[in-house]
Length: 155
Image (cartoon, rainbow, N blue to C red; front, side, top):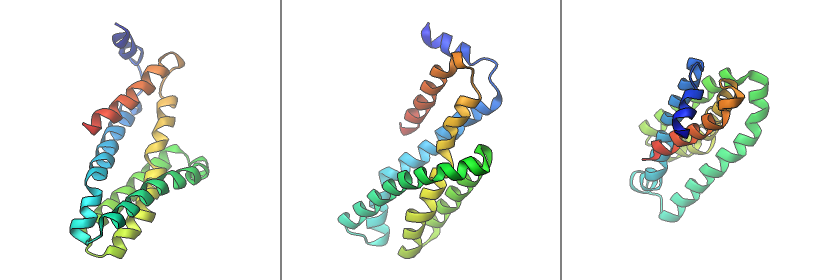
């Protein structure tokens, strides 16, 4: 009953809320799928040792967090919608470059510069959208659903 009431509380929310959920699903699916295969990709396709691949993987994750801290100022200045568009475009371009490159230098640049910047400008601002597109009475459920969507994408 509580879950049904939660969904009912979202009735009348703007379409942007559901777009935020869809983007969260797609980004989470992409992020977690890539995380699973990333070290194997570095080892098998680029000849990295297990230790080197682990270092790059760890640096990638750390840089997403570091760039995320710095991105707050950028998001405040350019706005949520523009930040989301720019971040999503940068992430897409980085992933395409990673997919087509045969150069380890291009790969490392994309993994340690471009992709973390795109990640930090894009998807974290969706939490702002959840807040913006819900009423206070439905916000708790809306945020809970946001994280459920992320976890379903992992499956």
